[in-house]
Length: 213
Length: 65
Image 1 (cartoon, rainbow over the protein chains, first blue to last red):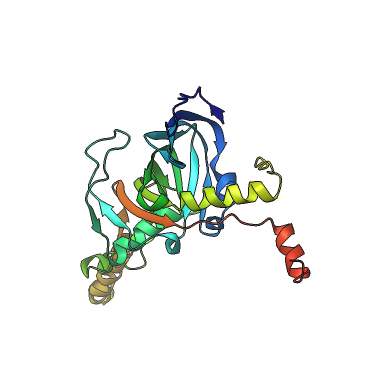
Image 2: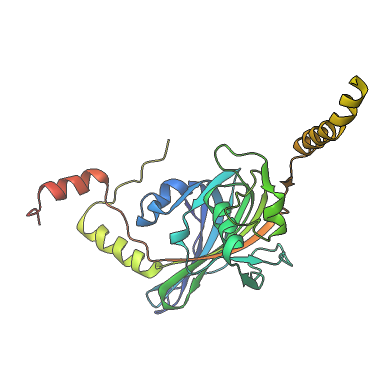
């Protein structure tokens, strides 16, 4: 991580503005440090810039942008998600920070297909915007383009009679290689994490997070 | 006589041929799924995990703190 030059004003209560540049951060190793690692696994190295403002003792991030420097993998177990997944209309804009398209909650077999895609996703492109949210949370909105890539798998065939009966999606296995466009809207308890980190910093020396091999 | 036997077996042979033809055209459909767009939400209250060694140490020494 590189800290860009800061704007510092001497007037009391003046905000401190700056930006952190991220270079080749191993997102997988980072997630492994948290309890989320049981449900989410990612292989990605990211670059990006996260502007911040420190005002009245509060740290706020705004217009942060990160992106994967190469292809990677993502696996999210369904129990990690908040509510049901939704199949969304094609996004109208690829611009970072663009609001996600209005989702339609998926049901039954369609929802199961979406979960399958989330559990075995190989991606070519990953980017995300970062912005502070109310109540001390940090919003990270990922846009990921990839494909379903389960171990094994191949062509999928379904019975003609199941198709005619409208049961084609029952126990349907999503074909390997199916293109997936994922909008992953996440939020973290950022202020709590900062407070815990500061508390830990007072009680013990900060240990360097070992790089994942 | 032999000609009559062959004529009598014609429906049977025809049925067998039909079965073979039906077997060759198995009633399955090859599936290709168009790109799927997914929206998922993940609100996480994350905690820093203790290293496995530290967890073991604490479990082995419950009166440590």
